[in-house]
Length: 98
Image (cartoon, rainbow, N blue to C red; front, side, top):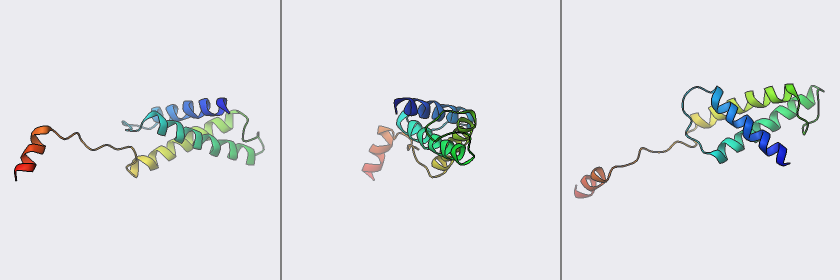
């Protein structure tokens, strides 16, 4: 199970490297997307008969990265992990005076 989590983190990090631009997500969301991508990759590899969902194989790893890139793109489009610009103190003071 620990190996699955570590592999999910690696897959999530690779997905962030593959997807162009800066992603504003933390390590926890990277891990979650990587683990979800790994489950998808393992399921596809199992369906094609190249291994079990819990086995590490080449096809499952490639599909896991592709699935994680897709999940990351969807999360980014949905605004998950996006932060508002930090508000300056002067702007807040001006808003309070009005």
